Length: 169
Image (cartoon, rainbow, N blue to C red; front, side):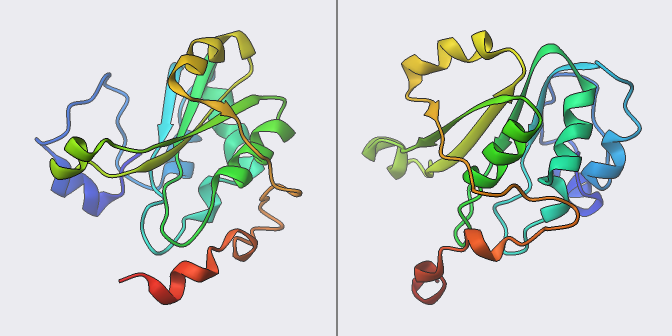
């Protein structure tokens, strides 16, 4: 899902893999999608300063899971300068009976010189065999949070990287 402002900026610049594009709040748009519609759903809304917590609660991931076909995969880009979100997403996925793995991509020096930045990802599925090929690319079972994020308990401060708040530009 694309926020309206981002949609206007991205129109004509983003190649989509399917026609499944919606402009608006991701959680509201997912509710409009029929069950078992997608093989892959990618969430990428967490790199800014304000975390849209409502997109990574157990309840939100339940909606995401509903629109995935059997064996489908949920991929979440969790890179954030101030919060370590992978444990939250992994805990949420596990609460829903999904298997999740995480990876931090670190670009080579040459890639960094070309502007490629490090990124953190979580992938989850109800079919663990779908994750087997990822092992060769340094994906691993991530550490889940002690308690998942829910609509009733959306506290993300427990995932704060407090040391970076004072040193980041």
